Image (cartoon, rainbow, N blue to C red; front, side, top):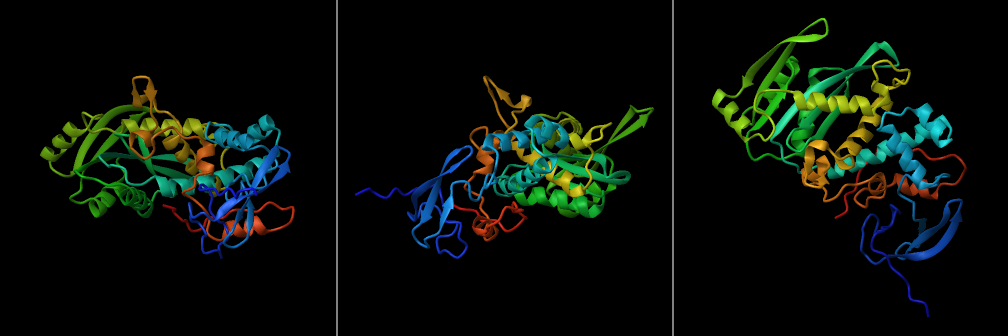
Length: 361
């Protein structure tokens, strides 16, 4: 008699099942195989509720008519400065298909960021903005970024108007995700909203200073540094404890913004690939944030023969990840929408919307 083979790296995707979202319960076993254009795929059976599901269910590869490698390559092109039209020509896909895949990849990357980008050490933060436009040059938007300098970790990002509420949300997001054991060194440009946010959220927790640059004919002619929160002794102590900065500066986040510009086709200085909707730009930043932190080796984090990613330096992961690791991660699963997507019938592809998260321990 053939022995049933149970697996530990799968969970039931049926929202009505008592074992829904729970790993290593001994309720998932190998059921059968089915054939696709890319080869054979497994099907699994939940012995608790009797529902079967494919090996790609719960991932962006579900009902994919191309190979999983093609999907991963399209996601990588999105963060390497290649636009939708160019990607469609290279991979011989329809532009609408590429746009849908990028949206789907951004959804999973957002969930991965929410679950994995936590419990990092905050020692030195630098904030800056990137100005761009959506649909037309009259619709100006800003990409606000926050960088943890010691690990080169991109800790927070927000796309929208440059208002006090947006700046406050960016800083609050980093404080909720990170932890700190000493006074934080926080620097930014001369935007007054940063000063208000620092005094509101970081009073007594940080030393805040601004770097104000005066330009003439597109050249920096004067740099002024102002200490707005904290004492001079606290500033000197924070600079002494910093491994990267010897003076007040925003050099690291400005270089980081250049990396973002080079990796996004929407942000070229002279390009026809600008974003038509703000949602597309936000999705691209989410996907790039995941790629930058967990997959892209940083040249400043080279230790001998090893070049680490920011997430490795921050202690969030132990190895360099790839898109396959992100899209099949077991820490992220949909609660109810994924079951509807698995059981629905028809030729129209389903659209995955943002929903609640479940973190499996």
